[in-house]
Length: 68
Image 1 (cartoon, helix red, strand yellow):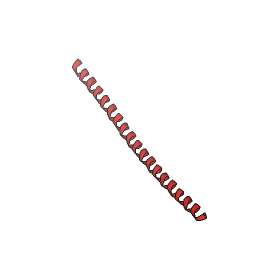
Image 2 (cartoon, rainbow, N blue to C red; image 1 turned 90 degrees about the vertical axis):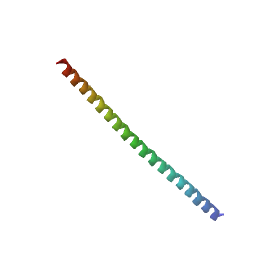
Image 3 (cartoon, helix red, strand yellow; image 1 turned 120 degrees about the horizontal axis):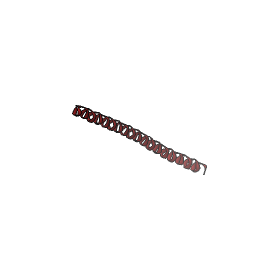
Image 4 (cartoon, rainbow, N blue to C red; image 1 turned 60 degrees about the vertical axis):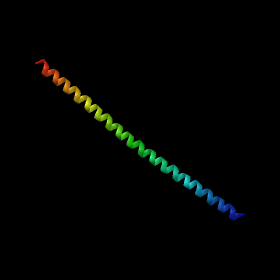
C-alpha cells in the first residue's frame, strides 16, 4: 500500500511539474510578444510624429517662400 501511495505522489508531482513548466513557457512567450509589440508600436509612433513634424515644417517653408 505504501508503494502505491509513493508512486501516486511521484506521478502527481511529475504532472504538476510539467504543468508548471508549460505555464512558465507560455508566460515567457507572452512577455516576449508583449515587449516586441510595445517596441514596434513605439517605433511606429516615433516615425509618425517625425513625419508630421517634417510635413509641417515643409508646409511652413513653402508658405514662407510663397509670401515673398
